Amino acid sequence: MKYIRFAGIIMSIMLAALLVSACGGGGASTEAEPTKSYTQSSQISKPKPKVMVVNATTAGVFENYFAILDITAKNEGADGVVIIVGSITQGSDTKKNEMPVFLTKDEAQTIRLVFPLKWRGGEWTPSVTTEVP
Image (cartoon, rainbow, N blue to C red; front, side, top):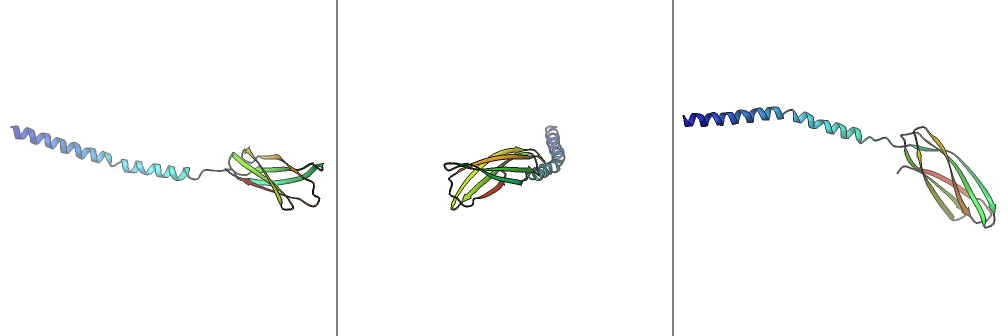
């Protein structure tokens, strides 16, 4: 009688282990789901800024001389912050200025960058680029 009771307990434990392993088999398909989510989240939409227009003017005389860039940028991507980077080259001297701007999707905004220059005569060349942080 002792051995029959002991054998019954062993059989119950084995049956419970078998049922637990059969129920745990569904976990493998559940683990595949986060991999799909990870793939989708790696394709995060970012802003796609584009410089539409650059109007370059000057103001002042001699020591109070400035180059002014009015830059119109448009965001053709998702909402976000873009950095407008402008530079002025005069001879061998280049001055750089930048400004972060939040643009919503399909929004165009005009940003003004002002560069102090020394009057040297001759031409100066503006340049504008955009960056996504």
